[in-house]
Length: 364
Image 1 (tube, helix red, strand yellow):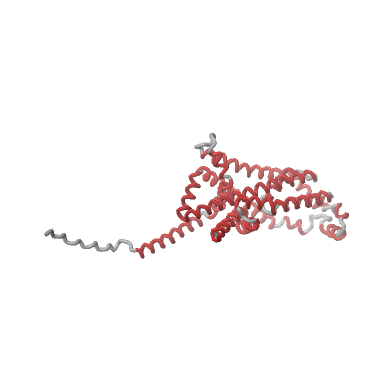
Image 2 (tube, one colour):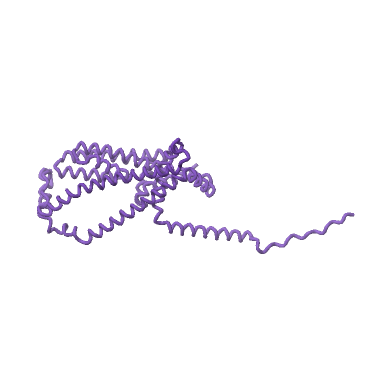
């Protein structure tokens, strides 16, 4: 008979090998550690999050254009050159209008200073159109005579202009201007890095999202990018259209510097419901000059243009690209602006897109 070898006893369990319960605790501890480190990193770079967000919005909005340009024979394989050219173009598009506006303001500052010194000595004469008003002319004339027609050098308002409050406001404005310049500079640097990374960056992001959240998460991110791109297109196109139409109206009504006013109106019109401020001030200036018909015509024409653009054209442009209803587009823009400031104009519709995608998945 063939004898069987003695049975080998199973190895004793190693006390150092992790048990399933220990593995669960380790995963939970790792999750807490990673979350804490991520939150700490975000807190460290909190002052630069706005710059990164702005750079991301610009890159997402112009990503299709960048993809086409990168495939041309001039920039193929030269992502650093493309990033440099693209960043310089964006910087010029922002800095040139601001520089022109500052130069024009400095040019007008001397005339404004002379006018201010004159009204300090002699007051402000009652505009002629006040006497032709159908009602309230006597009350307005009496108030004007008591407050503005007399020399203003001794008035409380003029004395307040020389107080410490104005100095405080000036320092606050200067600090905000320096902060905005720093954010703009870091935005350009971040934009250069994003464009230089090119498709590798977008591919890595989508790969990470797929690993963490699956294919549905990747689709959601793509929908959000489409929402940001559509919002930028809607704001810019509508703003330029409003600025062009109202610029023509400024020229027809005889306003000085109609082209500059049209450009300022276009910039203001890119923000929801800000265009009425510009053409409203222009209409008041015409009214003060005695052009009642021009002021009324500009106010009516501007109101019609803004109403059509804000309530029909802009929601259609944004809603068609994101497939969002008009109400969600409007709430997203206004609510985002109120919550996150100017950057929220682009974040709001993206978040509304997330809600729409989740709702669609639930009802299907």
